[in-house]
Amino acid sequence: MARAEADGVAQDPSELFDVVLANGKPTGEVKRRADVHRDGDWHRSVHVWVAGIELGKPFLLFQRRGLRKDTGPGRLDATVGGHYRHGETLDDALREVEEEIGIAVERVDLRRMGIRLCASEEEPGILDREIQDVFLLHDDRPLTEYKPDPDELDSLVRTEIAELLPLLAGETVSIHGLAIRPNEQFTSSVEITQVDFFPTIDNYFLRVASAAERALAGEKYVVV
Image 1 (tube, rainbow, N blue to C red):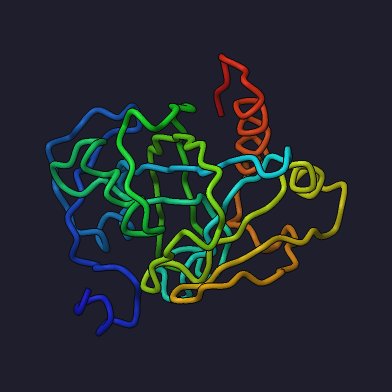
Image 2 (cartoon, rainbow, N blue to C red):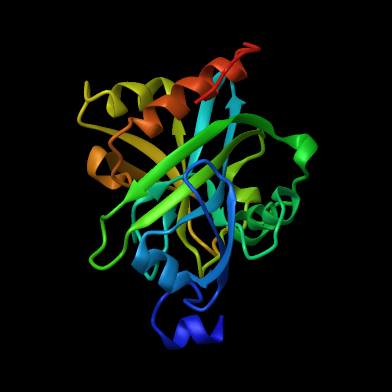
């Protein structure tokens, strides 16, 4: 992390990734993170969404990305998101959950929700092309039991799905959620609008929220 901090970002630009094709097939090429994002190479990442139920109301957690992230700083995104490092398997990549929000999970704890192809050009000079393995973790614990990583997250934000869906569908202007910041032991109320979310063109967050609601209700066949 020292190199990343020296560069003023929350990640190591020299971290090595395996380059893949758009169908996920490995090319055998290994490149630095900065070069992969500069050249627009396809690479793998994992998204773990945390959802739960409190007092009968389903909720979904988002991370607000750290302000020093190279893509989407300060935007709301998947609860946990991280890249596969060179040579890592899915089980290896799940280290991101404990690193980012402070809880340990294993593959058996997760429900697979699909695979997403995502290409983003939001930041100048960065073409981020990811194959994202998407999972859902059902966890009802209070927001105060998480430990957001101050190097990665600005905060962890909880939203009630019943209020979130109309916002993401463009039917309401804003909602309120609860947030906890790194190294704090209390939550605060936050206002959330559509511009807070990482920009997408595929209604990803709406699809995730809808899928999480159905999964929490016990539906068997749910995908993003």
